Amino acid sequence: MTSRNAIEVRDLVVGNGDVTAVRGVSFTIPQGGRMGLVGESGSGKSMTALALMGLLPMGWSTHGSVLHDGVDLVTQSDKALSSRRGRTISMVFQDPLSSLNPVRRVGDQISWVIRKHMGVDKKTAEQQTIELITQMKLPRPEQLVRAYPHEISGGQRQRIMIAMALACYPQLIIADEPTTALDVTVQKQVLRLLNGAAHDRGSALLMITHDLPIIAAMCDTVAVMYAGRIVEMGPVAEVFRNPRHHYTRGLLDSQPTMDNIALDGTSRLVSIPGMVPPLHDLPTGCAFNPRCAVATDRCRAEMPELSGDTLKSACWHPVPNSSEVAAQ
Amino acid sequence: MTAVTPFPADARPLLEVRQLSQTYNLRRQKLFASRPTLRVLDTIDLSVRPGEAVGLVGESGSGKTTLTRMLTGVEKPMSGNVLYDGLDVWTGGEAHRKLFRRSVQVVLQNPRSSLDPRMRVGTSLLEPLRSLKIEGDHAARVLEVLDQVGLQKSALERFPHEFSGGQLQRIAIARALMPGPKVLIADEPVSALDVSIQAQVLNLLKDLVRDLGLGLVFIAHDLSVVAYTTSKVYVMSSGKIVEVGKPLDLFRNPQAEATQALVGAVLSVEAGLAGNALA
Ligand SMILES: Nc1ncnc2c1ncn2[C@@H]1O[C@H](COP(=O)(O)OP(=O)(O)OP(=O)(O)O)[C@@H](O)[C@H]1O
Ligand SMILES: Nc1ncnc2c1ncn2[C@@H]1O[C@H](COP(=O)(O)OP(=O)(O)O)[C@@H](O)[C@H]1O
Ligand code: SF4
Ligand SMILES: [Mg+2]
Ligand SMILES: [Mg+2]
Image (cartoon, rainbow over all chains, first blue to last red; front, side):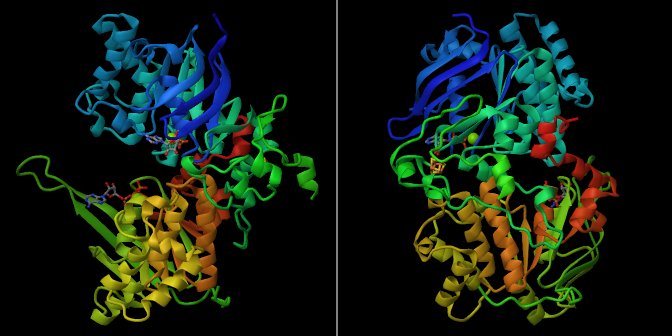
C-alpha cells in the first residue's frame, strides 16, 4: 500500500455516540501539497485534525479510513499512533501555551522530540535544536533554549511549536489556527516561516483556519466545511474566484477588504444571516438551507453530494459563475 | 429604528482626552534599586463627536486597552485630562461624573467571558441600570434596546451558552446600550468571531452610530476591519499617537513606521492568490 500521497482521508466520520461532529469527509493531500480547511467555528475542523492525529477526546471514535505512510491510521493502536506523532505527522495548535510543557525549558522540549524519533544522542539533538531555533528567526537562540514557555512572547512560543513540529521532517504538518491568537504584525512572520520551512522539508501542510486570506496565501487547494461536511473543494483560485456553493460565496462576501469600503462610509458588508446549526438539531437536506437565500424545497428535503470536476460543490442550485455575477 | 438626524462634522467633541499620560511602576530588579517605570501612554490627544466612529489601531502592547481604561474613567491618568461634554471628568464634580459614567459604555472582545454564564440574558441586561442606579421603566427600555440590536424577546429568558458568539456579542452591545450611552468604546469586538458573524456585528455598530448618533471608539488589530467601520483612525505605537487620518489615506499612503507595519500585515484573498502575500 505505498502511496504518493501524504494523506488520503475516505469517508471520515467522527462521533461520540450522541452527536456526529464530522459526517463523511474525504480528501487527499499529495506529497508536499498544501490544503486549507475553512469553516465557521463548530463546523468540525479541529475534530477532523484530532482524528487524523489520534488525539480525539475521551468517548469519541473514528470511522472510515485515513491512509498515511502506508497504513490506515484508523485501525492503528494508540501506541503505534503515539510513535508517529511528531515523526511522520505533526501538529501545531492554536494555543502554544497550553500545548507546551510549562515546567520544562523550551529547548529541552524540542531536543526531546528529536531524540525520541531520530535516535540521535543528546549533544546532536541539542545542536539541531539550536539550528531549528535559528531558522525560526528567533533572537539569541543559545539563551532562548533555556527559557520556560511563560517567559517568551506568544509569537515566539508559536515559532517554538513550529520548530518542534518540523524537527523530524514529517510527511504532513497539521496547523490548527496557528496564528489566531497572535498579533497581526506577528502573524505574517509566523506564516512565512511555516510556509518556508514546510517547503524546505517537502512536508505537506493541512492548514486549518477561518481566515480566507491565509489560505489564499499558503495553499494550493481548499476544502470548505459546514456542519461536519465538506461542501466545496478545489484549487484555491477557483474556489475563491468562482465559488459555486452559497456558503463559500457568503464567506467571501463577509470579508472586509480595502476594495469594498466606500469613501463616504456608507458601505455595508454582506453578512450571512443566522448561525451554524447545533449538531443535535441539524436541518434535513442541505445543512445550510435555513441561512441560504435561494433554498428550495429540494434543498430542505435532499442532501446534495459533492460533485464536479476540479471544483467540487455540494449544492442543488449553484452560484452562477463570476461572469454572470459581474453582469448582474 | 429612530429617525436619522444629521450630526454635523463640526459638532463639539463628546469625549476627549488631552495630553494624556500614564506611567506604571514595574517590579524592582534589585532590593534597593529604584523602581523602573514604564510610560504606557504618552501625551495622547484624541476625541470623538456624536455620530462619529473613530478607530484606534496599533500593535499588541501599544497601549490601546490602557487608553480605554482612561476613556471610561476606570483609571485616573497621571497627567492630562479626560473631558466629557467639555468638562473634566475627574475635577468636574460628582454630578458630572455620574453623567459621564452612564454616557460612556464599553463592549469587550470576548462576549463569553464578559457575560455571567449563570445569569439569564434579561437579568444581565438590567445589571448596568442597577449598578448605575438609573430609574425609569426598565422593562420598556429592555424591549427598546433588543429592537435596536435585532434580538428577539425570547432571548431574555435564555442563558449565554444557548447563543452563538455573534448573538452573544449583540447581547453585550445591548447591555452596553441599556444606560443610554452617548459614546460606545469597543475593544476588539469582533476578533473572537467568525468572519461571517463579524460582518453582522460590524454592520450593527455602523447602524447604531448612524441611527442613534452614538460616538464610537473602535479598537482592532486588523486595519481593514477598522477602515470599514470608522471614518477617522488613530494609530498608536509605544504609547504615542503616531498618525491620524482617514482610513483609506492611511492605507494607501502610510507615513509612520507603525502604520506601514500594520498596512503591510493586512492579508487579502487577492494578494494571496496573486502569490505575493507572504513576500
Ligand atoms: N497595570 C499595569 N502595570 C504595568 N504595565 C501595564 C499595566 N497595564 C498595561 N501595562 C503595559 O502597558 C502596555 C500597553 O498595554 P495595553 O493592554 O494597553 O496594550 P494593547 O494595545 O491593548 O495591546 P493588545 O493589542 O495586545 O490588547 C503593555 O506594555 C502592558 O504590558
Ligand atoms: N470534547 C468535546 N465534547 C463534545 N463536543 C465537542 C467536543 N469537541 C468538539 N465538540 C463539538 O464538535 C463540533 C465540531 O467541533 P470542532 O471540530 O472543534 O469545530 P471547529 O474546529 O471547526 O471550530 C462542535 O459542535 C463542537 O461543539
Ligand atoms: S443546496 Fe440549496 S440550500 Fe444548500 S447551498 Fe445550495 S441552494 Fe443553498
Ligand atoms: Mg477549532
Ligand atoms: Mg488590548
